[in-house]
Length: 146
Image (tube, rainbow, N blue to C red; front, side, top):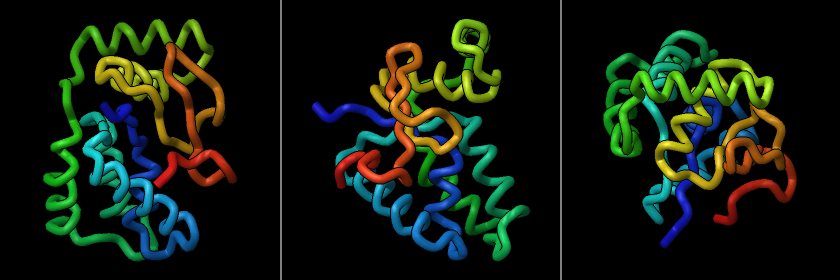
């Protein structure tokens, strides 16, 4: 059984940002590998952040309809809903590990979906939080093998 990896919005955004240079290639390769082995997971928070960013904040934004189709595809990776219990767990992670609530919500969602890793550039790569290893795929030797 393949270990599940939770993907933060920044990785999804880079994968779809034509101006992201080498980060686009790395992110896209990571996403392709996760599609192939069906091990990718995200949350509705990630989908929301992705949609807003790719339609409003990129140098070459995606059309809303294109972004909506991408969100439909990635919706398959949302294995559990965000609930009040997710929020409570995020508050515990935030307090216990001194992280922002929003980063902790990512980790709580990853934990609920039994992910062993979170792919992100927003947290300390190599750190383990709540039993989940943080991986920044843009750092040398940190990407999940593809």
